[in-house]
Image (cartoon, rainbow over all chains, first blue to last red; front, top):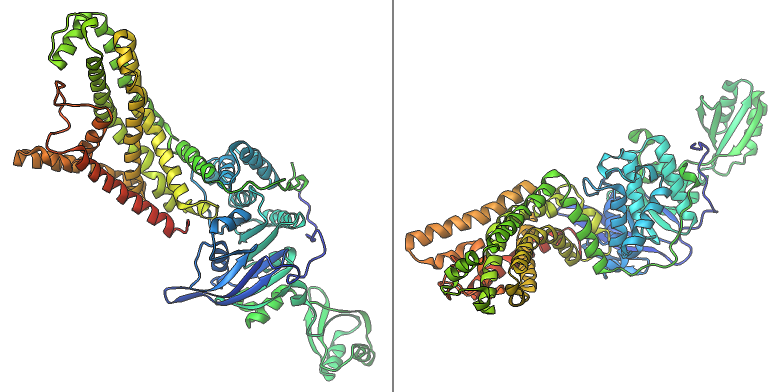
Length: 328
Length: 309
């Protein structure tokens, strides 16, 4: 049975800049011919789960590959788990689990062989690698598919198999490139639960995705990228905080006079007809008492009045400077 | 079982990255994948038939001492009357001739086709299907990948080359006990020759396989290399009347190298068609060595461009 409640993090979210940094990047630049994929990327992440957000072509996958040593930057430097991205790449890859965006498997190979082989490539002996492969496949929910070939799996199960290969050697850091790609809503929810669970047991991770709800549900920190640049970094909480003085209001009575009263006091209002609520933005230097005065003058009752928050999506579009509908 | 009831377990300690474990993992898994399907397995099975047939022929011949002596005297141009008259060196030469003929002529053809079956897909398919990405994220070096792939190709080729040949040699030694002692040293030589033959073929096919993104392309290129060089060699030899042109042939050069392994001297009493007196082990080794070095360069360059350190 698959629970349907909202995913909640297993522990209080950490400040992404606290603790010794596990990922640092300093002025990274990568160009493929005339196309600049990364343009002076600088960021720092501490332990925990971090999201790399951005539209397609933002440079997220390139940054992940640079951090793993798969793409050599033209300039700049970086460290992952204390290993320089310009240093011995095998030392770094030994401690990192990578889940690529693209399907990467040997056609015709059984799932169990595939995962076990990845364990052996990471230093495990044959028998322990096989035992570990069974263990992680059970963990990701693929125990019933162990003896099928990887290419015969559904898209969602292939994602799980990729996660199993990233986990088989028990890495300290997971680099997840679009982990919920191609998954149905149920599969996506399961994948996010696994990620939350992994963070709970102390595995740090960097989740590259264009799906904002994924990041909001599982990550502590986030870096928003567009056109090869990091536009903003910070905790998810700080990005979704109510910095615009938004309030959620619900009234009992006639809406028209109340809207007119708010308008007369310089309040910007958005009406959500499905929720039956109003989102009102206080003018600068105004006090929330203004809503009570407006309700009294309009002859309506104020049923609810609370500080609203922005969704990560709203914050994201604000940062990249585009309206949400442009990307919907 | 619902996945949410599973708990992730962290490992007590982390094994350090190990090149040898990675090499054997690639060798094991890619070798198993190369044998997948009825044709690769069938080819391996069919390749064992000549060994059985020759062993039966040896058994039938050795039932009659004079028949064997007739063969020995014919090859060594001697006139021995019984097995006890034949010196150990002659038994060795006759047996090494048998091994040479089996490994280069009979099993050699099976190995040539087997090289394409088991080797052409190795690097080409990884590149075509993006399977290569599964390796690059792991703590392995490009040399680990190449050696692992070599093992994957060499294993079935060794089975093709060594098992039937060794079986025939064993049969000859069992049915003619007098030959057993002098021929003991042939067993390690046979294994070394088989490894050399299989490894050279494997290196060349991996180099070819890394050139394109299709195993079909690699298969065709392999056969073109093999048969075109043979044909050119024959044409040049026939037209000039100079057998030095056999050096153009990949197969002929391999045979010269293997003959040196088996300590054959075809100009002393043994009636062998190869190697020719006009080119030496050194020149053949140079040519095959250059081809192998070029192939290694090609495959390593391709693998490193895919970001394996």
